[in-house]
Amino acid sequence: MEARERLRRLNALTMAVVTLSVGTLVVAVDTRTWLEAVVLSAGVIAAFVASIRWTAVGIPRVFLPCLVVTAAVWIVGSLALDAHTAFYGVSVVGSLYVPKLPHHRVLAAVGLVAFVALVGAAGLLVAPADTADALFLYTLVPAGLTVVVTGTMFAGQVFYDLVEELEDSREREAELAVVQERMRFASDLHDIQGHTLHVVKLKITLAERLLGTDAGRAEEELREVRALVGDTITQTKELAYGQRRLNLYAELENAKNLFEAAGIYVRVIRETDVAARDGELLGQVLRETTTNILRHAQATYVRITLSRAGIAVLNDGASSSPLPGLSGLATLKERVADNGGELTVEKGDGRFLTRVQFPHGRNDR
Image 1 (cartoon, rainbow, N blue to C red):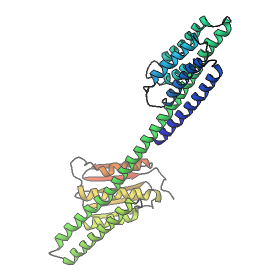
Image 2: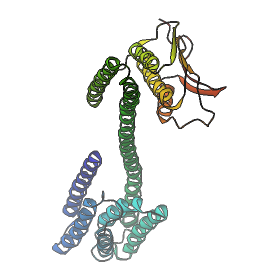
Image 3: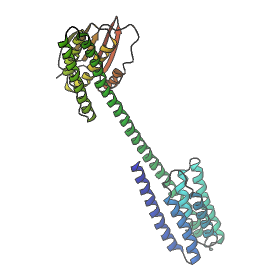
Image 4: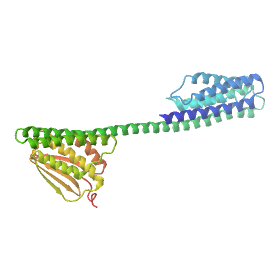
């Protein structure tokens, strides 16, 4: 928006300076009496006022009065004052605003040129005896210059419209980037706090069960809850300052501990190391999948496989009901796709499989 306003001001200033400079020269060259000076100056001033308001959105109110004044100046200059440069004002005002009309711009341009030419032709009635010179000065030159100026303004308007569209496009891209960043932040915040809250719930439930039978173990579980909450606070601060980075192998160990604490048998198969560029993304997928298993499944075993293709997490205890929304995985699916991979989920025979695959050989070292 700021760039657009600067462009508007620059265009208005440039057009006003050019209009006033050329107009002053016209008055100085073609004025022989004070009456001619007054009439021609009126046309120049009207053209100057119109040029100042030219960059306004739409057609400003000053357009019609300026057009009437400059048209009258051309009529008086051609028919009464023998001033062949009196067309200057109407040529400028018309050429400035014809390209801005919402409809029938070409027809309006033709009408402008025709008006300038016909008024000049009518001036031949009061011109000197040399008809050829009068025809050139009052008809061909005014009409020709009006055509050139109007054509130039049409091209300038097209350029100006393109600049406007480009600026609008940049603004939309900036707004979209802000929205995407907010969605990313919300997703990461959900990953951190949603995961932690479910784990805290699990550990507190376990501690409650152990209070009557194993107070020491219950106390240990509560200490782990406190440590987990403290770690979550730290991660939230890091997220707020853009410093958070997930470590896949730390997430792998964390998932293993959580499943075992919940009484779920877990098997980890590491066929190969994962490239660093994919580790954080796979860590996010593993964290979200772990949370989903603890929330939605009655699992007795989980198998996590790391390979050159990516990661696969298989669990039993999947319910027979339709798949839940899994909004976290839906967001991660887009991130994986943006990084050239594919995230898929499959459900059948009481098992649930979450898999991320990257192109073959991507994780080769």
